[in-house]
Length: 453
Image 1 (cartoon, rainbow, N blue to C red):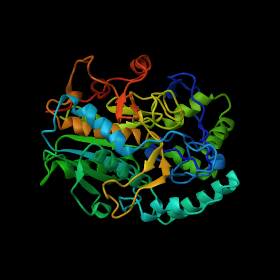
Image 2: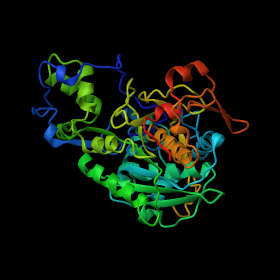
Image 3: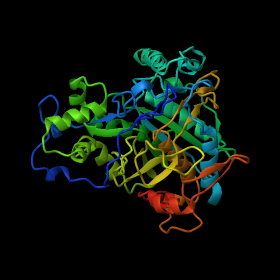
C-alpha cells in the first residue's frame, strides 16, 4: 500500500475521509460513469491492476513533492516527525505477543507480494546515502523540489521501488523478533532465511508483480506459494503480505491518459465529467475492483487450506473502510496507528486490526543489503508497513502449537495489536482500552481463515 512521505517537514495532505462506511452500490447508479477521456470509467474486460506509491499519487504531495515514499530529516527544519519508530522494536513487540502462548515448533514462510520493478529485491546503497546528500533548508519549496528530483532520478534508474523497502522492513521486523539471518544473496534470489534460537526458521520470499494486472499477480502468488511448499522446503504455514491496492485497470489507464498531476485533481475532473454523481460514488467506483477477479478467486479458493493467511494494507486514503485486496473478507486488513500512541494515523484507512505504521527509521540490522549501515535520517511510514508487522506476527504465530489464529473463541487474555510502547523498558502496553476494544479485533478474530495444523 502507498507509504506516505515528508520532505519539507510538512505532513502530507490527504484525501478527505468519506462520511459513511458504506456508499451507494455501483450497480445502483442511474447512469454509468465516464472517465476524463470520455470512455466508460469502469470497463470489466480490462481487469484490475495494482497501485502503490510509485505508480499513482493517491495523496497531494504539495510542497512535500516526494517520489518514492522516503522522508529526509533535518534537525534545523520545522515540522519534521517528533515521534519515530524502529522496525526492530516493532518486531520485538510482535514476537513477545505471539510467543506469549507458544514456542515455535515448525518452519513457516512469508510471501512479500509487491512491485520490485523486475529486481533487485533489496534497497540500493544510493537510498541509504540520501541522508548524506545536501538539500536546501532555507525554503520548503526548494527543499521539496530538490529531494523530489533526486528521488525521481533514483526511481528512473531502477534503484528505488516500493517492494525492496517493504522487503527490507519485513527483515528488520524479524531481526527485532529475535531471528538471525542465515542466508545470502537476497538481492538476486529474493529469498531470505531467518533462524530462531531453537533452530526453527522463517523463509521470506519476494514475489515481484511489477506493472502486471491481477491475472498475472495471481499466477505469481501461486508460483511463490509453490516455491515454499515444494521441495526442498516443504513449508505449509505461510503468511502472504500484500502492501498494495487493487483498482480497475480502466481507472488507472484513464488517470494516466489525463496527465493530471495528482489523483485528487483527477477525482475533481471525474466529478465534472459526471454531472449528478456524488463524490462518494466516484470514490467507491475508482477503488472497487471489477469482478470476477483472478486474485480474489485464488484467495477465496485457498480459504480453508491449513495455515495460508492473507494480510493486506488497509490503505492511506483516510477512508473509513479498507481498499482491496484488504477489503475482501478472506484477508486481514491492517490499519496504522501513530508511533508511541494508539491513535489511528491521520492518513490510514480503517481495517480490522491496527499496528504502528511509522514514522520508521530506515535500518539494515540484518545486513540484508550487504554492508550498508543504518540511515536514521531517512524515514518512512504508511499502512504498507503496518501489514508486514501483522504478517510477521502471523508467521511467528503459525510456528507455534497451537497457533493463536486457529482459536475459534476469543479469550479475554488474548491481546489485540493496538499497543504503544513504554519507552523506558522497551515494553508495550495498551493505553486506551476502550478505544482498542471498540476499534480493533483480536488477531484470532481478525484472521478469517482456518489456520494452523
